[in-house]
Length: 451
Image (cartoon, rainbow, N blue to C red; front, side):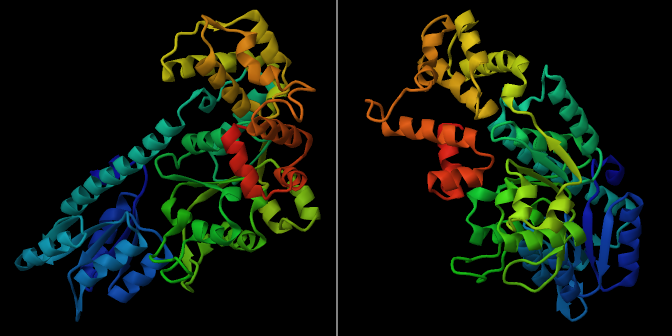
């Protein structure tokens, strides 16, 4: 039946004041591997919904003196994705229709059989499967490109890929280390895809891109009125990733107060939304990434030592592009084919001079910088093959040119300076300190310039 066809288990809430109904539905669903919480009172149901995330709820419309109809909007606020099935006697079909209008997904009339419960659960399970699959496909379409394919001719990179595949099969936290642009986010998505959580959501939070005072709310959510501008409840990324994976990019830049709450979540799978005291639970795997030396951050008192050891269960260090030169020309070729298609160009390849030039570069921005370089050459190039002259932006950035006072746009000087500072420092924080800007500003500049 529906439960055995599922690619993952559903979290189910049963709300009914009849003990036999609760036992019957619980037995049916638990036999198919679903996780079930059964309660008899709306207040208990609301409390459970605040503590953990549910995919499906069976709600009786007659709960003693209480009206199950009033529980529907409460459940939807805490879990907007939840599918609610109302339970009703035949004489209350009109009430069931009203419940559907208020946000319920379906109804089941009393008396019902175990097969009916399994059938409706299987149907809703397939809907949740499709919703998750569509979300994943949308994300993949937005990110689709050669850099998302984990292939390498480098022995060192191949070892990292094999280790990532082994780590994916476990539930362990994975810490991805490496310079900016080496592909840490690509590895994170691959680990999620290779894991048993692939059918569930994957969320991404770029820690430097979120102001420190909002990062806690972004991760853990907030209650309406928790702070100025909080006009509605926000479930948070952790709740949205129930059963799946949360990728924390550049975790070394996370504020200390948020580090403490993250540590608690990693240890106990418990957290509170901002502005609430209700303890919630979530089943979410954490993958983190950093281009900073977290041991150094710990020594400086900028990163919690206990959090570092919790994160450092499986550490994968992704080699920079300059340490795997055999990958440069094949990667450039993949980018060329992809970008030619995207820009409706017909370019056959690279001249030998262009290939030598690509191999001669240090690529401080790694794969991201290589892609940016090929994209510019594709857009501005006009020959059958990419030639050395099509890399004018790169040849102009060789030592000594452009210089201060040259007739070039200010943005060109800024891009070159930021690239050189990042290449000569060990972390984004150090680079931001040298440049005299905060990390969020540096993050935005890197995105603009493809560094």
